[in-house]
Length: 619
Image (tube, rainbow, N blue to C red):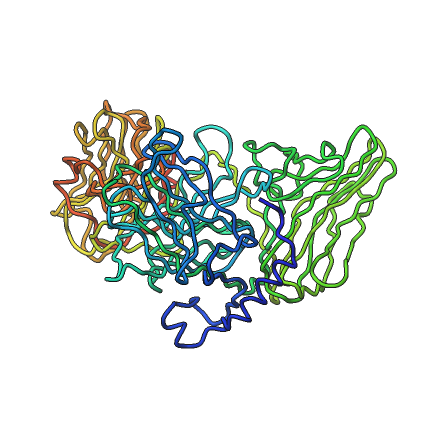
C-alpha cells in the first residue's frame, strides 16, 4: 500500500463529498445515523455509488486467512460495487484443484485518526461460516503503522452476538504483554431487513461503541494515538461452513468518517517513540518513515525526556537522514508543533520541518544543547486537512541529535496542559487488566460479557478486585477464569443467599472459600480476592472476611480466557473469533448470568497487600 496517500487525493475526496451533497440533511441523519454531538465535521465518505470499487481510495484484501478455526481465501473478484452498495460474496469453490472458502473485502488507502466512524451494512446471516467486520487497523509491512485494532463490529454469521473490540499491538516481549484491553461480546438484534448502523467514536479518552445509535460498550484506554486504515471485510471459512447456504452476499451501504477538535491532545502517532518497545525493530520507529542514511536513525531505550524511549540520529561516519510522518483528514485550523530535543558532537545541522499543510513550509532549527530543551512552532495554518512532519539532520562522524515528545496539536485551552505520550510497557505490580475504571459496566442478565486474556490472574500469586452493585440476590459468577477441567483456575461467585465465594481450581474440580451474608441487592460492595501460594483471602470493602491456608489448587492455567459479566458459557473464544460453544459447562448451568453493575475491575499477577487493599477501598 502507498504511504502516505497524497494530499491531492484528500482534496479530491472532500470535493467528491461536497459534490455528492453530503452536508447531510436532517432527513438523511435520521435515516442513516450521525455523530453523538454536532461539533463533528464530515471529512471522508464513500457511498459506494457507481459500478466499480474506487481504487484511489481502497485496496482489495487478498490472500489466505488461516489459523485456529479459520480457513479462508480472500479474492478481488469476490468484491464488487453495484446497486449503491459494496458487495462481498462468500462462496465455496475449487481453485487450482483445491477446495476454497472464498470471500474478501476492502482496506482503505487512507489513514484516519481520532474521530467518529460509521458504517451501514447488511451482514450475511443465512448460514454459518462467514465473519463480517467493520474495523480499523494498521499494517506492519512497509506501511509500519500497526499500533492497535478497533473492531466496530465482528459478526459471525448466524451468531446472535457482536464483538466490539480493542486490541493493542504495542507490548513488551514475552507472555506478560498487554492483555486484550477490551473485548466486549454484545447481544445482536438485527432489524427485519438485516440492515444496521454500526459506529465507534475514537478519542484521546478511548473508544465508545454504538449500535443503531445506542452506546453498547466503552473502552477506557487513554492517549492511544494512531492513524490507521479502515477495513470492510467478509471472510469465509470461519468455524463450520454451511456450504449449501452459499454463495451469499454481505453488503455495505456506506462508510463515513467525521472529525472534531481535540485541544491539548497530540494527533501525531508515536511522537514519544514508545510504540516499538522491544517488539518492533528499533531501526524502524512505528508510524514513521525513514529516508537517507537510515542506519543513522534508531529508537533508543533510557535517557528519554519522557517515558522510556527516544529517537536518536547519529553515526560514526557522515550522515544525512530524515524521519517523516504525514497526517490525513484532520480538521483545518491553527495548530502548533512541540518537541523535546538535544544535540551535540562535531559539526552538523538539524531541524524540524512542517509541510503539506498549505502553500508554505515552516522549519525550526535545533540548537546545540546537552540537556533536553523544547522547540515550538506556533500558529501552523492547516488549510489542506493534512500535514507532514519531518525530523531531519545531517552531520559529520560523531554528531548526534535526539528527539522526544514530538507533538502536533491544537493549542490547549487556558489552564490545560498537553497530554504527554503514554508509555505502554507493563510495569511490575500494575494491574495486568483493568476495565470500568471511569464508569461501571451495566449487565442486564443477557449474554453480554467481556473476554480477558489468559495471562490475567496467572502465576503463583494473583489478585482480583472490583466494585459490584448487584440488582438482585442470585447465583452468578461476575468474573472467572476457570478452565473446564484441572486444578489451576479461579473465579468469584455469588450465592442466592447473599454469599460471596472465591473459587480455586476448575469448573469440574475446585475449592470454594466462602463468605456468607456478604452482599445486598442495590448496594455497592468492593470485593477483593487474593491467592498467594496456597493461601486464599477474601476482603469486602477493604476488610478481611475470610482466609484459608493449605489450598492444593493453583492459578497457573493458561488454557482458559477470562470472562466478566455473563458466564453461561454459551459462547466461546475460538482463536480470534467468538462462536457458540458445543455445550455450556456444568458450573454455568447451575448459575444465572450476572445482573447489575461492575466497575473498577482490576486483575493482578501478584498478591495485593492489606494496606493496598485498604487504600483502594477508601477511594
